[in-house]
Image (cartoon, rainbow, N blue to C red; front, side):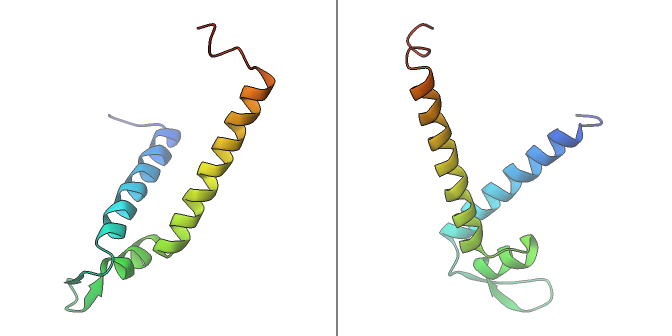
Length: 86
């Protein structure tokens, strides 16, 4: 895409961070040697690159998910038959 909008850039950055976090979560205790010669775990690499710990990011995502679920539940309460009429 030639000149993506700021919204598109933000969405891509969120997706990149999400997938990087997933990879780091699975491999968080594995160490790799970085370009500077230091050995670091993926958990440490995530924190250095993203400025937030892997656990903080996971909690942040859990809160977002809960908020989405609560919002969806409120929608179902306000408009109980809207899904069945489609």
